[in-house]
Length: 207
Image (cartoon, rainbow, N blue to C red; front, side, top):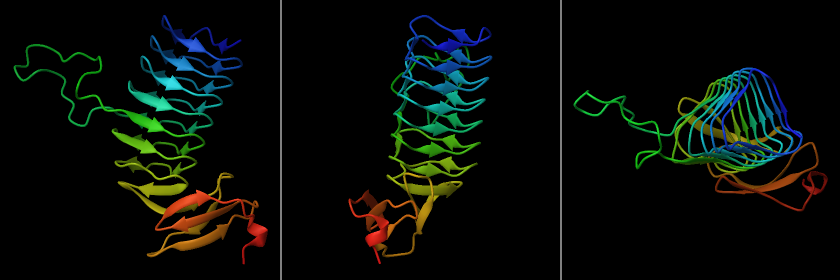
């Protein structure tokens, strides 16, 4: 059973998995779905039809707009903002009527893959993907897709290295990175042209 704070606004058609907690002054729009054991921090907004997986942690004051999908085990830190329109306008060109808020041909999707982390105060663009177990450093502005296991920083965000599933940076990128690398936690990876993949070899066996 989900735990919902009495000040939260939950619209019709929202679904929750077992053990999910929604804290004070959260607003979740119609049709959104959240999986098991999620946490939604205070003053967060989740737009209509947003899909959120299991065991996702969303901190305070996060804005998640329409056409965002978040897979299992994702961490979204405080004050992160998602976007879904590259060229937004409030009105039509005649200035006599507001543009509708519903998704249209200009609305672009964002996919946040399993295990990834988005640091505090980030701005996430659209028509892109945050890769599996990737990490976005605090205050970054993401304007293009982030590969699996990459750490990105800055505005615009750029890859600086590879992060382990445990969260530690195990390798800093230089031109021509190729080889096998181990994390101090015992997991191991192979990098070829900055594409990072897990291997079955443990760090203790890598020289």
